[in-house]
Image (cartoon, rainbow, N blue to C red; front, top):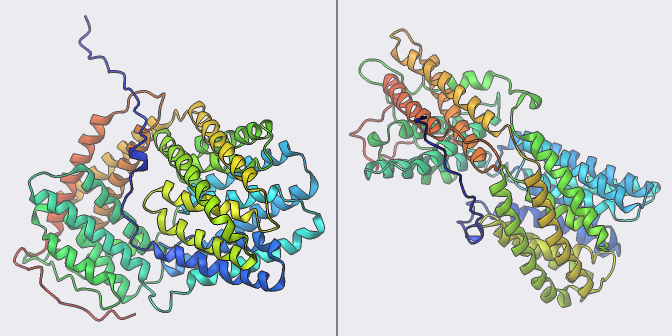
Length: 567
């Protein structure tokens, strides 16, 4: 008789109300909102003055690039924005040439689906986003169904390129005023989440969710600071020391003063001097403030891994995108739709890291689009007062979409839907009833068919990725434990081992969460994941104590030491 306990079958609960719950707005919601208005307005108003508003869809393609890379340091942002503009132009060029060579709707949908899959895979691999591939897919898919000739293609691409260059300038415009703004925001977020976790530990009930969120925020802060490789500065080094303090708080929350972390975060958000962390050197001569960044310098000197070597669920997501977008477009065509790219883009917008998140996005997309259609019917009379009124309505929808989408995707979609419908009015007025009906049908088709394709294309390798992440954590923990126990370990080796283990823990939690949302797979080793995380956190705490990084318990949260780190 076997003593093995059978694994109960899990019943998948598909969230509906939870998917529509509003969250807190982003701290910098106004930045992409204002940027897209500043990028769209001048080209569109110029075309209004010239009487060629029918060309605004091409300039808008380039202007929408201003939505990207707001979380990147400016040195990295310049490169990312340039690549986004080039990627947008590449997809637009393929769409324009294809539209010039054929009007076969099946061929156009097929090309649009393949472009969507490539854009999804590239954006996921490079971690470009939000809004990731959705904007690029919208631009290329919509252009496929605009009649073209080969002779018009260079001129239309030139318009998009000019607007893209202007969007690049808009994205880089804040750099002279706050050259370290993105790094400061990321550091403040890391300090605040570390303080929140420390508060739960002081209350006697450590929250695993708060701990995971804090580790993720600290990891994101390091990624932001390290993005400006080979560009060290006094301000950036001071921010790095603060992120080290956030890491220390995660490893030893009981010995951390949350109020002090929050005070540092408040000071960092401004444009003044970066707070001084204080020298944590102990009487035994352990790691001090000057030595604690040796691991940072070593990591900055290491070249990033090439894109093709980064593991991840890119293949299943790309296949889901290609299949779902193609089927959604074909079904829309079979129903007699004039704009099947709406169904295609709806399907493309669904695909997230796992099926559970994809379902939530489908619910959000449908609800947001249905409410957005109602908003469009209310806005249409105003938009049809003249070309200027139409442009102003488009600008208002752009601003509203970016201002609201951070609270929940469906709320942003309420503004995105009338925006997409108003864009169809640029060449001339369209029948309102027909637009509304087509949009509703294509939304439902795209959501249903797109989600069905996601269910059909299973991600069987999700469990393997969890196993690899577990192995990575075990190896990183063994290395950190060995160095922490060795009397001759150097500060650089200890720091590198500690941060390597912290990064491995973040990756394990993200991988496990993504795999837990997949369907039709074998049971995941959830108990091993929890035990590995607990062991890793104990090792991190031991490493911190070995380094002597714990703050002086006698230091109060009202300490106001600062160092001159003016940009």
